Each structure stands twice: as C-alpha cells, then as structure tokens.
Image (cartoon, rainbow, N blue to C red; front, top):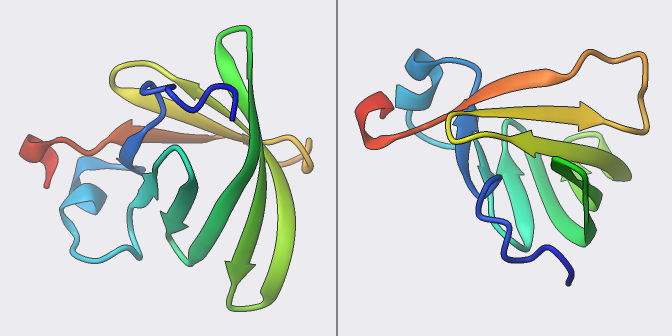
Length: 104
C-alpha cells in the first residue's frame, strides 16, 4: 500500500484535549496504517495515495446504520489533522488535535 509509512496521520485524534481524556473510542479516532476506528466508526483503509501535503484514502466502513465506502483526505501536522470527506464536498472538514500523553 503506497503511503503506508505515513506517520503524520497515524495516531489518536479528537476535537479537543478534554475529548482526548475520555475513555474508550467513542470520543477519539484511532488511525493506523490499515484502519480507522472510534467515534462510532470501524473502517478498513482499502487504498491510500500521497497527494501534495496529504493523503487520499478509500475506506470501507461499518457504522450502526450499516456498511459504506468513504473517500477521505488526511492533512496532518505534528499537532492537528484535517479530515476531509471527499465524497461529501458540502461537509466542513473536521479539525482534530493529536491526543498526547498530556491530553489523555
């Protein structure tokens, strides 16, 4: 998988430090090189491509309402992640912060 070594978006992410501190995976989103889970989602990363300053990914997801494919873009810095739904251009990007040991 191209881009599998992209450590920039790998980690635990949430909207706020307070959310990072909440136990379980209902508040934070955990992203690895192969999957994404939390906040009601469980997704497998089917494909990922590095494009410019980010990564475009195709996800196969399970939610409470069923299974769906999602096209997303990860744009990460050391501290923040913009999660953009490419398949929903009218939806605002999510801005998440990296959950660190201090924020847990």
